[in-house]
Length: 126
Image: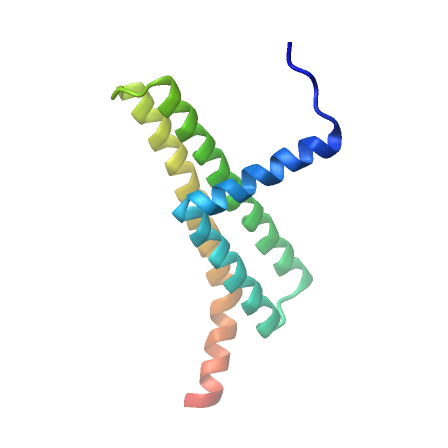
């Protein structure tokens, strides 16, 4: 019988999972890179509190979706090491969910940042 972990130990396992995803998954590194880039842009352009909240929600959504995608891929690989159409569907659907979250985050980022970038460029080139 498995023993239950304490709250602190559960947090340690959760952080270990995050670090493992960042260490092993190229796409998680890319997503974290965008979190850093968008955060820097947020500070540089002085986005509003509401815009920060939108960014934070999308950060969590995209990073969480990527972590879930990683977990699904690992579980499917264990359960079905041979090629299987249902295994492919599970992996493709999980990857598609990450893509949808990422595309919507990019749209929100464009809505928040493009007008500010445009005004910034106008100051120097017009």
